[in-house]
Image (tube, rainbow, N blue to C red; front, top):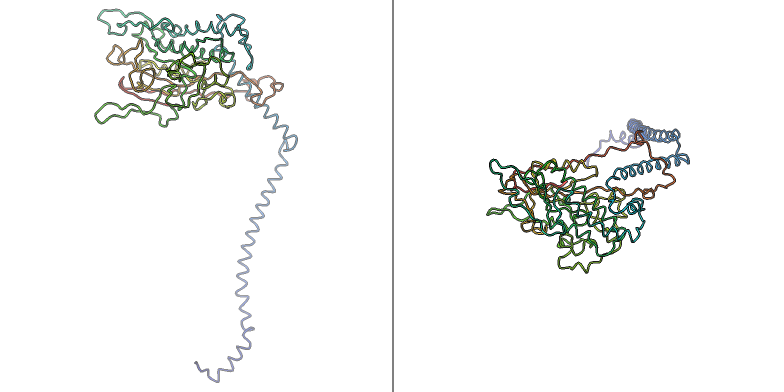
Length: 484
C-alpha cells in the first residue's frame, strides 16, 4: 500500500470534499460541442423534410391548374377520348374490310340471287336450303378452275397426270424450245383439294362461308404462281415448273409452328460415315402421330395429309357438325398457333383479322426464289411468309422418311434445270372479318362518321411492310430452313 505523506493528506481531503465544484467548469467544454453537432444534424434533417413537404404541396397545388379538372368534367373528357379511339379503330377495321372487297367476290356462276344474298349476309345469318344445295353442286366446277388459274392442267377428277418425258431434257443443237404449260400441279394433291369441297349432303351456311374463304385464298396463291411464270413458254423456262403441294386452312395448320421450334436456321446433321441423318422433327401438316389435332368434319376420311388416318372410311365421317368443329384449326393466332373452334370467337387475335395458314411446296428456280417472296409480300391481300425451307426431306404423302415423287415431278439433280430446288413456304393470309362495333365496346349509334384519313387525328398508322425471309442455297444438294 502506498503511504501518503502527512503534509499532503490535508490537500487530498480538500479535493475530495470539493471535487464537484472543481470539475463543474469542464462540463460546458465537453457538452457544448456535442450540442452544436447534434443541432446542425437536426437542422439538416428538418430542412430536407421541409423541402419534401413543400415539393409535394406544390404538386398538389398543381392539380388545381389541370384543365379539365379530375372531376365530372374530367370523366366526361376521358369518355370522349375513349370513344374517339374506338371510332378510329372501327374506321380502320371498316377500311380493311372494304379493301378486301375484290377478294370477296362471289362467283357469278352461282346465280345473281345467290351472290346478292351472300354479300348481304349478316354474321349470324342463314342461307336458304336451295342456295346451299346450289353451292354444293356449283362449288366443284369452281374448284376445278384453280389448276387453270395457276397455269396448269386439271387432274382433280380425270385421273393421273400424263407428263411428257422429254419436257425437261436438254435441247439439241438447233432445236427450238418445246411450248407447253408452264407449271404442273401434282394430280395427287389436286385430288385432295377437290375432295375437301366434295360433299354428299348440303352444307351448312358456315360450311359454305368457310369453304368460299378457302377458295379465295387458293385463288390468291394460284395467281402468285401464274405471275411468276408469266412469259414462260413451258416448264423448261418457268420459274415454278411444279407444285407438289398447295394447302390452306386445316391441312396447312401445324400444332408446333416452325417459328416456335427455336433457332432460325436448320441444317441436317452428317453421319460419321457420310450422308445426312434424317431430321428429328416432323414438318408434315396434319401428321396424326403428332397428336393434338382436333377433328374437322370437312376434312374427314381423305388421308393422313388432312389429319385423319387412311384406315378411317370416308363414309363414317359426319358431313354436318357444330360450328365449333367446322372452325377447328382453320385459323391461327399471331404466333402461328392454330385456334380451336371455340377460340375463334373469343381470341383477340381473331377479332378483326382471321389468319388462315397456308403451305406451298414447289420446285423453283432458285434464282427466282427472292422474286417469288417479293411477289407474295406485295399482294393486295396481306400474305406473311413465316418459314422458308429449301430441299426439305419428306416422304410419300408429305410424311418424313422417304422420297417424295408425284406425277409430273421435275428432277432437281442431273436435269436440264440445274438451278431447281424444292421449296416449302409456310405462312398466313390475313382475311378481314366483318366489322362489328359491339366487339370493341362501341355502340352502333355512337359510331358516327369515320374520321377523315387526311386529318392528323384520323390518319391511320402506316402498316409495317413485312420483309419475307429469303436466302440463297449453294446448290440443289443443300437443305436449309429459315423461320421468321
